[in-house]
Image (cartoon, rainbow, N blue to C red):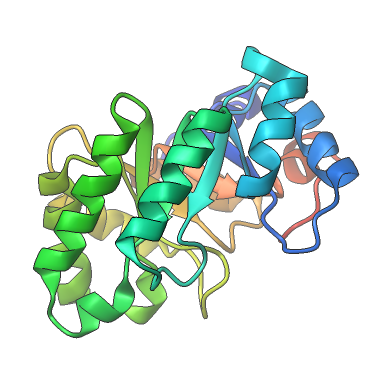
Length: 224
């Protein structure tokens, strides 16, 4: 198993704070850490995208969440959220699928929704959260194909607000079934340096966590 330097790990981190009660000072601290440690992005609530972009500009990459955390709102609402977030300065979008559609076998709805959001994102990165804790293995495999066909850039395990977060077995499963050009993001429950290394070795290109600075640099972030 390959090891990675701290900076190699930071370069894969979406430094995350999505708690409902997150204050501006907490968000600003997150962003300062992201700039200092050169994380891949900050992943923040949509309401903070504009003030963060106004303060930091292109000093960091802003990621935000759409249809979060339950995913069962209208596609038109997700589309509007996406347009607003991109207008405000987001460069990456993490959207939650409608898990009810998966459970009801309405896979056509799922793929059309992802396509709709990707069309709005154009060249911006779209990550699709499938919330693995609620899915069967067959669901996960089917969604690997759907995310690929819809043209999304990443498949992502979890919101971090479900009953469980990322699992190594799911990353390995994704790696076997996603199409060429689709990357993997592991998110939720990543709480040790060993977790980070293991997920990267299993095939994750991004890690969604608030604990990277605390674990790798000895301070700062709070685990969500």
